[in-house]
Amino acid sequence: MLFSRSLQQNLLKLLSLFSLVRAYNIIVLIIAQYLTARYILDPENGWWALLLDIKFFSIVCASAFTTAAGYIINNFYDAPKDQINRPRKFILEHLVSQKIQLVLYLLLNMIGWAFASIVSFHAVLFFLFYAFSIWLYSNTIKRLFWLSNLFSALLMIFPFWGITLYLKNFETVVFYHASYLFFLILARDIIKDLENLRGDWVQRYKTLPVVFDVRKTKIMITLVILLCFFPNYYLIQEPLGLMQYYFLIGVPFLGFVLLFLWRAQDQKAYLWSHNLIKLWILIGVFSIALIYQKF
Image 1 (cartoon, rainbow, N blue to C red):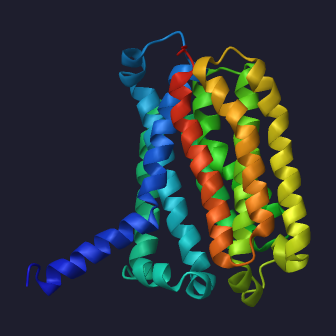
Image 2 (cartoon, one colour):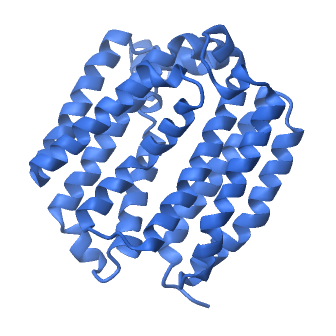
């Protein structure tokens, strides 16, 4: 055999860990924070000043480790419904025992707080609050009607609030960007509830599709996506270089997502809708680098 059984098991456990902490999402978060700082929050300074800023690096690391820990604890509490909604994913992620998952959760949080301590005591409090909020969401709020979606979207943009406070940039354009991202994440989160309807219903989660029905939930998603167009309109007026085309193209793209969503009838189609918005967020992250670029 090319690999021994022991090596295969270790590789699978490593893959399980990468899945547990959503390594892909963490990498995107780190890139997004640096691009946001360089081109939106602190455009006057160059890359070297940002890359050599130890405190900013520590905030990004604290965000990454605390968020990774959050994915673990969220997975821990979601295990029963994931067993129904995503059996393959459940099997992969539970190659690592729940005891080890909890140890990793505590370890990652402590590493995050250690990085925050390099910045200031206030930064430690900020990330303690962030970690507690993630736990509260995973343990309790996630089961609550409507509040779960709002809380989830706020948690996703919380790390960007951390770098905003550090760089002290509170210009209006920053809040337009944050609002656009917030509504996109909120729409994606509600679509995930459609995708997870069966498991949520069995586990008695009070999500929108469980409390109402699929059609009313789609109406609410439509309203949330339409709310994206308000900050989108103002961002198009800003001197954002080639990034303006991201917001211009966003109008027909999100319109297409809505058409696709309304035609969707099963879990696979809802997954596609969810991934389309996820793709648009990813494109938005990398398009930040185009702010000062022109044809």
